[in-house]
Amino acid sequence: MSDSLPLRLVLASASPARRKSLQAAGIEPDVLVSGVDESLVVTDRAEELCLELARLKAQAVLTRLSPASDQHTLVIGCDSVLAFDGEILGKPADPADATRRWQRMRGRSGVLHSGHCLIDVVAGRRAEAVASTTVHFADISDDEITAYVASGEPLAVAGAFTIDGLGGAFVERIEGDPGTVVGLSMPLLRRLLAELDLRITDLWTKVAPGGQSVEPLGNVRS
Image (cartoon, rainbow, N blue to C red; front, side, top):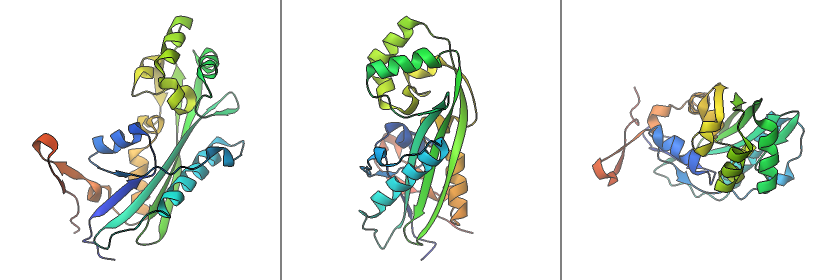
């Protein structure tokens, strides 16, 4: 393996929020959806569940890759769940489920866990960990819950809320990394890369005015 090879990050997720988080941090990922059946993993521990699903997603995408010889390919799999009242909450089953959740969650708090599994395809190595953030929900009204559920946003996300969309108005505060709640923690990704002897700066890209071209920024090693 040559250190001069440009790094390529493949995101094993259909989540627009995770992709936007990477892009905002200067990383332009390729996206390949894993198609993992999340119901196959059964456990009563939220941290264990999200990490195992992240692992399965990364591995599923890995088996479908054909890494190019002129790139150093990495795969990142992520999964998030909310631990609330002793339950593990993923995406709501339907609008009624999302409404019931918010009626319970309002004015209270839960812990959002996001599992991360990073695989270095070239080196055949893996680094993984869970990031956890406590979320304090606002005591919102029934009308606000109805409007929020009707927007459709809660149906697409773990725990039936986001902080980077409409749901941000209904979260009073968090204790931890906001990226964990969005679904991908950039500080944790940096640490996982370091475990694989890689640097997050090597994933940075520079987009020219107008977004017409992308050139590697950080692929220089001292």
